[in-house]
Image (tube, rainbow, N blue to C red):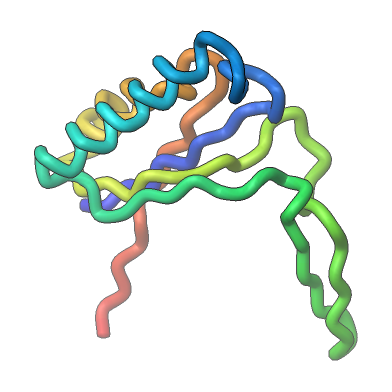
Length: 117
């Protein structure tokens, strides 16, 4: 079964570019990605640009409305994801707990719906 691991954190928290902690943090992400790829669990993964680049689209009464930024005013924003193949939720939880941002942000795990054709 596929599980989407959504990576949330407040921008500006955790190791920041230019700090001594950032290099080891990015290395931890590289190591995690390699581990997931080598184990065959990784289906896909990507990081997202900062929330300042987000645009929210709404259609009301046939009119398209765009708003700069994310939809919700929250303390934490979606920063990226891993789509993993796992045998069950317990395995997905174990793998998500290794995502480096889990130490200061949150990882939301959601099973992917498979539609019958």
